Image 1 (tube, rainbow, N blue to C red):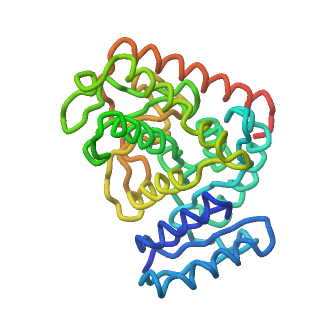
Image 2: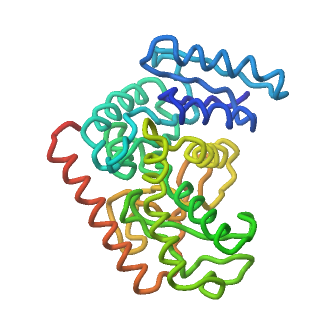
Image 3: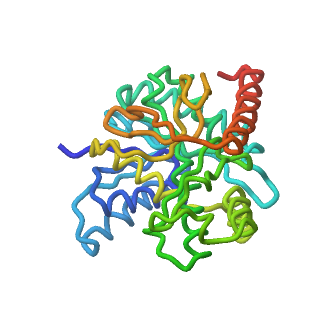
Length: 312
């Protein structure tokens, strides 16, 4: 039997997740959105592409959460997107209400699903999703680190004129301006990046990585990134539905790893059928550890704001 993957939010990110996931034949996809006709129309469009793409999956669209029933994975992209000049944190109150209403339906319709949150501000929304669902923390995870790392890998490859396939890197911490690109662990073909570029170039890449999403928002003016976020999410979905046990940077619940306890943050996570199988720690230098502590403080402040609202 094919896996069932529901994507809540049929906008650019959600629809692109369904397209990329269908192309990999990860399972049957359901698009759910409050906009009448939109998920149905996008699903039909995708199904009409299947003969051309040579793929054999089903994609359906609905405005009814009942269509989610029995899903193996639920991806939540629903929420308002950033506009130029906005930070991810500016989305907190509105998107919190959306996450709450969606997760209440997940509990009813897909109580055994692994939940992948894409909505910003990411780390705070994953926290909210786990609190609303009451699911074990390993079954509620957030997409951010893969995206941030992909951006950094591209920037490094561009700077040294190498293939992105040969760049290894990782970004830790909260999905915001306080994220931690770990340049001390970044290599190109096994060669440390510090041996391939100047300290000034490294700092430029770190800064561009931290503001990678804002750079795209400023260019688009009426929306935010969706190709790279969708591709990053599909990486996570594939690791779960195919039980790959891949180690990917994701927002996971920490229980003392990296010296952090009781919150969600971006760290290397082993992903399999049950979700976050295990957090994998990596060595950090003093500067990276300090940056991670600063990022932790920011995430805790967002969570304090959520708790103070009394919405959950």
